[in-house]
Amino acid sequence: MRSTDVDLPRAADLPQWTQQLKDRYLKTNTGQFILHGNVHDLIFSGGRAWALPEFLSAFFRPSDKLVVHYDPGRGISFPDDASAARAGRALAREGMLSRAKLLPKGDDTPDLIVARRVEAEIAGERAPEVALEIIEALLAAPRLPVALIIHYAELIAPDGPPSSLSFYDRTAGARLHRWSMAHEIVKGDNLVLMLTSALPDLSRRLSRNPQVLALRVPLPDPMTRARFIASIHAGLDPERGAELTRITAGLQLRQIQEILAVKATGGLTFDKAQAPIEAISARKKEILEQECAGLIEVIEPTHGFEHVGGHEHIKAALTRIAAHIKAGRTRQVPMGVLFVGPMGTGKSFLGEAFARSSGLACIRLKNFRDKWVGSTEANLEKVLDVIEGLGQILVLIDEGDRAMGGGDSDGGVNSRVMARLKEFMSDPTHRGRIIFVMMTNRPDKLDVDMKRPGRFDLKIPFFPPKDAAERAQIVHAVMRRHEIPHALTDEALLAQLEPLEGYAAADLEALTLLAYDDLESAGGAALTAAHIEAAARDFMPTRDVEMMRYMELLAVHETSNRRLLPPRFKDIEVAALNEALSEARRRLQGRAAHALV
Image (cartoon, rainbow, N blue to C red; front, side, top):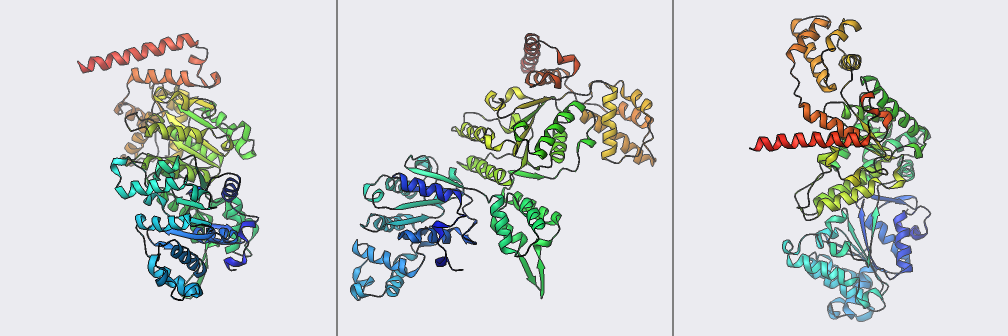
């Protein structure tokens, strides 16, 4: 099917952003738009897949606009010879190009000749200072409506302090800004589209201009993925198609095509859509981690709640949430869950177990901050696009107090980043679909507004096991997870664990693995009470009692439900808690001051 055979503006499956563009363009004086996000992907519309430049050319063709493309890496181009000839005649009228050279036979010069001469004169012009001047002549030409598509707009008008930009970068940004207000351009039925994958990379003079509308091009939604997969694999079993649609969430159509397309090699044909789901999932993981290099980690948890010792009340609360997720009861699913408590109490491990039990895809958000101007905001936008595209997903944030920290000495970057992240986390359309789980032992270092309901509806406190029985549950879970053979009776194990008050889950795991190492070294067959006893004498937990106490009180202070507290804290009065926190803080501050003397 040729592009001329498709009445694209009237296609029933146009992307939503095209409707927003049409509405704003037809109902207001807005003539400049920024398309950002997934702008280098295919667009599936009108029953076929298009590269975005081709899609835009076909979309504007019925409007009788002259479509002009400008790519700083390729220069000025037109979708066909007729458009190039039309541009050439206009540039000759405006005195931008020589009429004698362009139209040797006057107005009777054939379009093909005009197009070739236009190509020779301006098609290779890549320098923005020259190319934009030529394009401005077209935009200002009377009775010539133009649809200009600027590719890689951030390379033409990059963001940054004026002192760090070249003269040409500054003037290009100023010229594009002026176009949005110039009467002869605005009233000329012109339209300018600036394409960039990351909005923060584009000059703020443009991205924050009220005369310019920024539209996000999202990753393909489930319906688009389903139709695209069906188009490249006609006759695919519906059940298999639904499975592939689900597993390809978060990928571009180009990437889906690469993963699933039929491949012929050595005289053999491989239908990659019939590959095992595990192989497709592994390839998706590679693509996402490469696409977001160092920004996210795709997690495939290998353990569920059955491998978590103790924390029965927490597991029960999270199991209820997992049931709500699976049943689609979105109103009963929290927007986010905050795990608070001292280090080593199993927060991260339980977060991964929750991901497996909920059936959600899972990623771990890593450090997205960068030293380069604009890179931090661009990195965050890339991550949020992936999260949005993945659909139903659990986002784990370890050491949230550090990940979400930052100062005001960064030119306001941290404030902007946090504002954008808060906006995303509190979006009500994400409830039941995107769940943030943040772990921290210092919630006092988090922005108060970050922790409020609507972002973190449920705040769960974690504490070291309260008695030998809970410690035994953790040791049994460690032995199950690591498949450690043992000959331990409950009575013998409880006797060994009774003196280990204050040991956190991480301490108990380290102690158990130490005992197992001794067993292996001695060539024994099964772990015994003697191995646990010897390991307990040898193991030295690194524990700051005063800091652990402070972190416990912080966990109590942050918890959203008293039912989640252990008996020793369940009935504590707020005034008493605040007094205990103040005293613990004073002791730590006094200790720090003494260390400086």
